[in-house]
Image (spheres, rainbow, N blue to C red):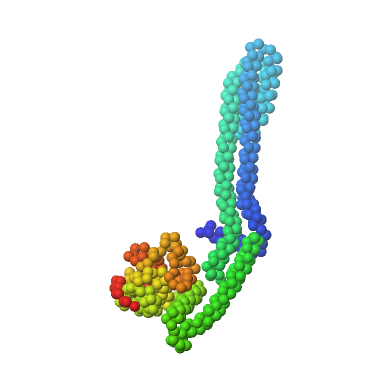
Length: 510
């Protein structure tokens, strides 16, 4: 919890600082990030070097002191032996020179003893030696008989000297142990500092990564919103290096340009629909008057030509309406849900194409049992209209056309199947793409626009449904529309009818 609060405060402070200052370029930001991340590591290396230098100095000083103290202790022991030897020789041969040697050794022993006093303050053996050396220093002034009587003191003198040597060794061992303990403490401190500074480096690395990634993700969201057509009216200003800020400004320009082109497209479609429908209505009205013999009786050949013109005009009107429907779906994604009867919608769609079906000579089998569903009625009707129109255009003359409806739990499946040339495998992946026309030949005077199935797929998607090509149907081509029960609330979803209505297909010759 504390770490999370620390990160939150750090990011907040960084955001405030970044508002006042930001690197002028992405290269500058990256170099600054590397510098900031390496700073704790540099501090760690400096502290480690200082600690190692201190340990090295301490070990060097201790080693030198240990050598000097050991030499001094051994020198005391050697001097004690030489003093005893000189005194015993003097007691035997009584030569004055031997006492001079004894006196020099005693003076040297006293000096070393004074130096050794700093190493072992308060040592009893050292104090005893100091007392004995003062007593033994008077031997050169004594007659040989008294010297012989004092020789027994050298045994105690040697014992105290050996004890001082052992105390010195223990003191050196304690110092070595102290250095080892201090080295362990330094090592532990270095580990703690390493953990802390490496953690700080990781935090700084994450912070610098966030400073670099944040504007890139802002640009990514802008690009995705532009691609999906959901660009907000006022996009957030990109904060970051100059290159990314400039790229954000270019995206603003691109967004404005796309909006301008979209407005121009809408205006073009509105004008074209009006300009095309007006003369087309006049052409169809004229062909209707000619068909009714208003301008006089027509010969069979002339009537055939008039009917061809009228059929072509009707198909052109259908293409224009499909194009307008496609444009409308691209900008109106909200569905209007209501309850309606699927069988009634199917009848209305077939009635609209009755003349084309009679001309095609297709045998129609349609679902006729009442089946209430909640969905977008106009979009569902548009889907079926495009599928039936597609079956008429590409189906077999005198073939079969079946419209089936079946409820499967909380989903509705409507199938539009027809006999004819199967859809090629290479066309299936792009079958529902706008303006894509497969390898199959459309039967009729005019070529299709390639947006009928795209409009149908978009209408299904707007209702949270799907439109797919079925591969397990007895007929050659079968499109399956799957729609969920689009309820207003959860209660309505739970109260949907639980009766399973199977597909009932009755022949209806149109």
